Image 1: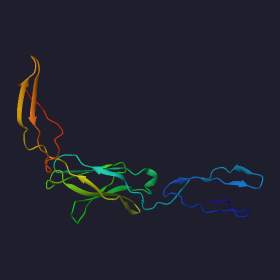
Image 2: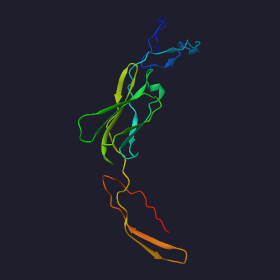
Image 3: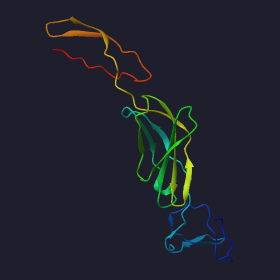
Length: 194
């Protein structure tokens, strides 16, 4: 608080964080200067409150076929505002109106995996992650777009040919597999010889 009148013997300290332990000292001052601070008070913990800080860096993707992997940066302990802290994960297919909601009760969690055989590979989902504690549900993050897991390529590369370039080397070439929205990107090829 601001400097308090010398005849006042108490003050209200505001804008403290919920569910945090504090200790306080008092310092006397006059026109000559500032004296020594008092001994610290006993530790005092502020009351719990609904969390107000949502997780950040909502992303995800990858995973196996029929999976939606959602990740986030966990909320630090000093911003959890109370006991019983956890995460609320909400998601829906892009264009859908109803949300699926899941609760992740672990404070340290930074990932949720939804498995469902009806999820088509590489489908976009709207995702938001919120927080809660024993005092109630808090803030939700803004919506992020996360894609479900990809499927393995459904076709083999075409046009494979080999050309001898030396006594110990052969150059192998093929036509690339075209990108398919339902199976995703081809990240690499495996060349086998016998």
